[in-house]
Amino acid sequence: MTTQPSPTPGRLVGKRVGILMENDYVEEEISYYRRRFAEEGAEVTLLTRLWGRPSLTFTGAEQRAPLTVTEDLEALDYTRLARLSALIVPSGQVSDRLRFSEDVERLAPAVELMVRAFRLPNLVKGFSCHGLSLVSATPELIRGREVTCHNNLVGDVRNMGAMYTNQDVVVDGDLVTSRTVDQCHLLVRSVIDLLDPVPEPAVAGAVS
Image 1 (cartoon, helix red, strand yellow):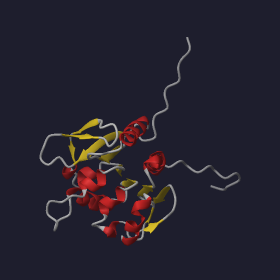
Image 2 (image 1 turned 90 degrees about the horizontal axis):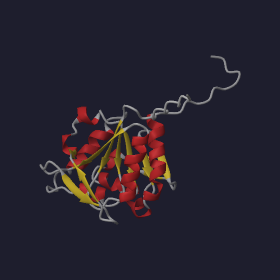
Image 3 (image 1 turned 60 degrees about the horizontal axis):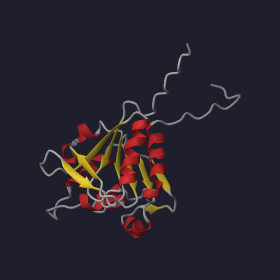
């Protein structure tokens, strides 16, 4: 009888990844995030502003696919936020919808969430495509940071004081940004590498 080898455990076992959600999300992107992070053993949680409701169902931008979210981003205080290993702001209209505030003198709850997130250096922040528009009201969060984004957002991120870099994906410490939804796989790969760094190979003849 041949013994089958045990499956190799994922690199992110025991870690949690949060993904912000709203209407007009890109279906393939969200599906990829959920599948790929889960393949590495991470628990994936969809988050949105629930407006006091137990759940909200959103529809995608292309196939109008429905997706129900039950986790309220407003419930993520510092303690709960620190339980996440990564927080992803996806493409589509998600960031634009979440930055709405009914009181123009106050930050939207999703923006307040990002302020808390940027105060946690151990929490990886990922932004795809237009995602950085979510923090346009708080430019200090990315001022001086190297980022990439959709071409339509380049002027905005420069006005926010960020250093635009003409690359498909840019990693600046705990901040990962990608150019468009087409590079979401590069964003995920970079996030995984930050959460589980691959050890550098030992140098032959090195003295320990």
